[in-house]
Length: 425
Image 1 (cartoon, helix red, strand yellow):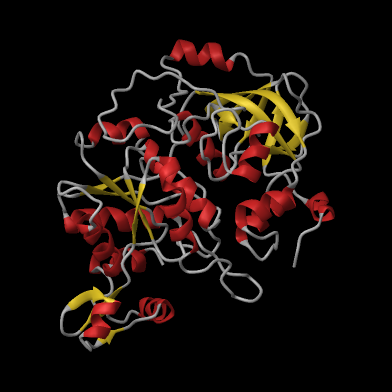
Image 2 (cartoon, rainbow, N blue to C red):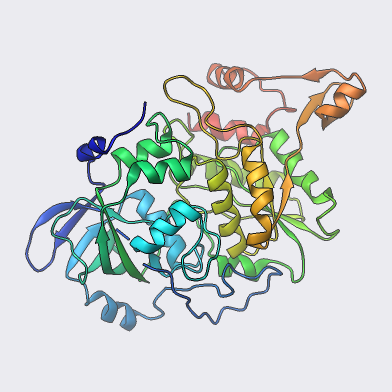
């Protein structure tokens, strides 16, 4: 089922806007041609930021916050997705952007997957949307999360995006059975606005999301850092996968893994971010692996498959990673109507490997591991060659056992993780 232009006349705005000066209430959402920012951060990591400089848009003192906030003529309550984008703009996770994309930048990223002036590769557009007719270029908005001031956006332009084209280019489909396309069609407002961002305060979360500068300062110098992205609890196979990635031929002998889960909005049926965070914390304590580091990413998933793999690699580059593990069907999704996959199992791997040189990153394909009675976890090819006996437990069966209080085999899941999932069911 394709969306048409008419479908977007029904879009409901996703953030409320209140005019400080005029008292009008409307529905809104927001969007800057990227510029390069200067930062005094000491970059200890081996990897250079995307574009060469790690952006830092945060104000540095209470006086500066007061001065900047006084520029605002309207207030906007941000959604959870907008807060994720704002945090990654403010802390440099989206370097080299210094604000939400203007129309020229948006179009170039959608159609060519690159920023227009620098030609730097960029996987997905970073946009701020609105349904408000009153919000106009030249206005300055104070972005809030409840009572907390988050950022100032100085709007520079306003445009009507071609949403079907955006979805077709970024998600590979304009069908609303795709969760990303559905989000664009039903959550985002009909306008996008470009605007320069100045950060006031980071959102308050149930878990701390270290900034790129903070993560970089924690990394050893001149060491390969392999990023592992996930949006679900980590089970035994995942752990074996990312620890064995350090044995890849293109990873240095002293390399480490940065486990960097996304804890922002994902698909509707995913486990909530705060629960996922609790599973990661107990696993970090249980494994206590000196070659594994942990941090959390305030990122809003698009389920965009190959294009999102590029976005994830770019963000992890800004966090200091040199390598990125690409799993099977990474950031993939199924049709909400037919249940069929939108992407092939290896589409993201192939696309990421093809574009890795443009990013200055290296990929580490994830191993296809199975658990066997005889030798524990081995590759599927090894199990076949040696005629080993694999044990299998489907996700559906696991969830049924979890709900029923049955014992979960420890070859499949860590007991500490299972306990958290049951306590938060």
